[in-house]
Image (cartoon, rainbow, N blue to C red):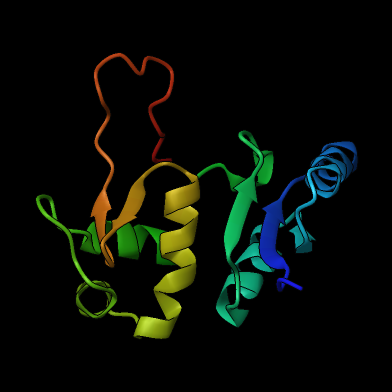
Length: 136
């Protein structure tokens, strides 16, 4: 038997969370899902590790704006190219273990992405009207 897919589901609507769980189950996908609604719970779950997949609601009022750590990490991302966790930690003044949560939040917000083990800023692309992220 395959081990379950460990999912971290960021969702503020219990009906939507139930729909996702039902859809995955009916598709024969074995999951172990942690569903969270708050920024603090999301970051705590990320810091525990063991997550295979993150599912996130598109719009969550509690996730408008950036926390201080997220701002520090965002500002530590290079303008060109990509950086490792250790490089971002040095630039942000945070220890590497404290960089992961903010990076995940930036990724969920569409502001950063991981590529080949390195992180970079997501640039707005032409043709993606309305999909630009906000820095508040």
